[in-house]
Image (cartoon, rainbow, N blue to C red; front, side, top):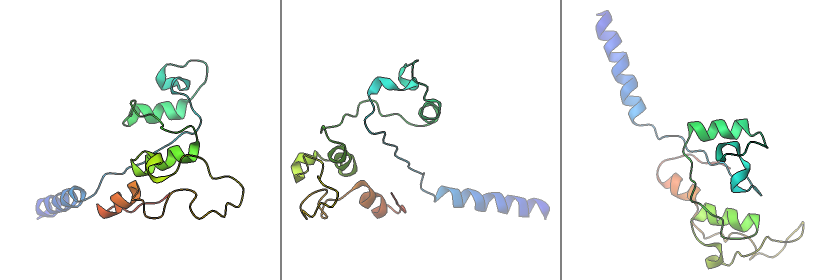
Length: 124
């Protein structure tokens, strides 16, 4: 009977784990050059935490920003599209930008939207 309970517990754990989606964490370092990290060979600037994440995760080394402005680049990352295709070429200016057309258009489907459709719970 003990073995039956043990086997049943292990079996239920395996079934439960099979239904779980893997965690996805995206880290974006702003204004950072490709060669400024230890994991990229830089020995002058210590980046031990980022290096540890790079060693234990997946590294995408062929991704490039397509805008010279940080918020436009982030919009490109979040949508998977060139931000110029939806009119986001520059950073919105001013502390209280009142231009309703500035920034990421509300209708743009983002990576978070796609992940929610796939069963994930997302947050920023």
